[in-house]
Image (tube, rainbow, N blue to C red; front, side, top):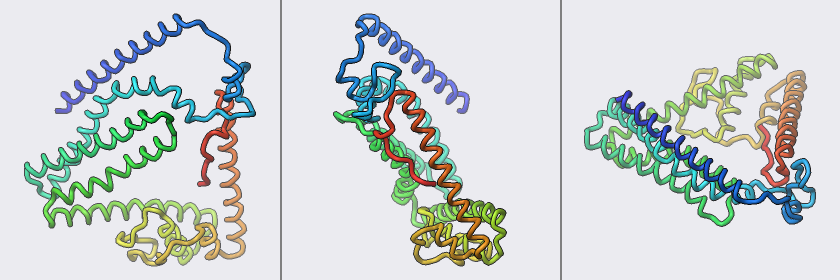
Length: 301
């Protein structure tokens, strides 16, 4: 089965390469057939100058305008990789179904229903992404939002599909496993941060527990149903009922004066790194003729 899947993937890639070469050829023919004219005043005012590729100051180049201009090319490229995406998705779904069958004792009919519904869900999400190309004006925020939705769909909607297909006992076992996995991931991230802060701030055991609780409750992934064990070893011990308004301020509140001074410097260093990343990104965008003012601002860590 693995050898057959590899052959299918090689065939898909070969087909994609062939179509890309045809597309390159057609683009080259189009360029050679059309005379190259200097940019018009309107194009320069639109944000790309006629010397050095520098953005004009009066009107920033919008990434959304660039996407809209590239729409014909994007629409041609979309079907090239569709089959490869479907094959990859099907293999991932097949693995999920096989694992669920082993863990929860699914019947053959349940396995088929689960696989069919998950594949339909995958195609639905892919269709939503492709449909964005049909808009008159493309917006990068729409693609980012749909990309996040597609990633979240697997966890959220896969659970909905499982609930439809599994028996009550099978779904209860599945849900318990999902909660354990999410709790373990959240616990690992929080413990890693506590270890890092403890190394730089010399936290006491009590402070470790307090910081752990703050980090867990601040996470958007936290759910009261999760049994997250911190340094104290008890599920959700030290985790507040409500998230803190500001994570850094909540952590500062459990530190002594010397630790606060060190942590405030860490906050300042973190912001300086973020600002440096913004400046580096802006320099890169200007180098390729895109005005950063047309892009979303980078958020803090």
